[in-house]
Length: 479
Image (cartoon, one colour):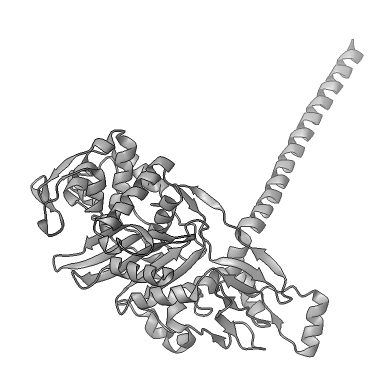
């Protein structure tokens, strides 16, 4: 009996020991696979960002012996290059000066633009350790990879020149592929002379010349935001096609009034005409009938309060309404006033998605990376980012945007050789007639197409319009 008990006790202890061993093995296996998984994720997702970080000392060390690669435009024009034999950021040249300053960026004083996002590639070589020894012995400098972008020199010049001497930005992309075609920002600076002007630029709080207004601008949107108010109304009211509103030139919100432009009455309008004529009264009324939690969700699906899918520095657009918002905030936000802010890059993405049946193609600036042996080491293929607007609603918004350009507030484009679609906006900044002027939309002619967003910042009412800037750019692009 004692022997049997000892045998059973021994078996029980053995099972207990095996169980403990199994638990310990499983625990360390989970940790091992987690570390492997994180390592793979880091290599795929984060390694280039870390390598490109301007505070990464290892990258700084590489700059001492590698000639920085060249950045090219879509047709092979040099946008940034280094003198043969120089290393790192020394003797860096920018042939187009102010025109490409923000999107190409700078490679010193913290780095920005493509110089920052492509830093890893521009300082990457395919030389073997043996070849590196030979290069050191010969005194030959290793050369980083070259970056070929999607940017078009002619279009970039047109966008930059169309802005004139006014503050503002233009962002343009191919809505079918996501390729960024232009990103112009004013006022600008000459990156060729960055070392001598850096201290002045860093203290430039008035003009903020270092800010890429195309991707980092935080602008009150004005009436282009009615696109989102209309979208939410379509989603909440299946009978939106039967909407009718009798506009008297203003609407009351509590004890205050919201006026249509110049107090002009639009009389009876349906939703299409209210959008085409940009009727503040109608949209302030529509906005107050919406479910704020659903409205917020719709806007966030359309990338408000989200990081933009861009490879260069950008800021989030802000939508602040919720179920606790008061009537005035709801009404003013619904027509693009209030605390809502957007960037031209974001609005161009939204226009692109409307063109593309609600699907945003992932925006990209780098077409390919070629190493010093002329071998393509990386290419970018067009890829869907996600649907940010339901397809049926996107089709309807597209037809509304066509009405804006046929007989609405952008009717200056009605008889162009191309077919234009858009939404205009005038954001009032104060009581002194200072405004932000907006245009977001797209145009096509044959197989050629372009999406665009234009913002003229803090100009006097009547001193110019983003719509005329967009038309000038469209005219050059298609004709």
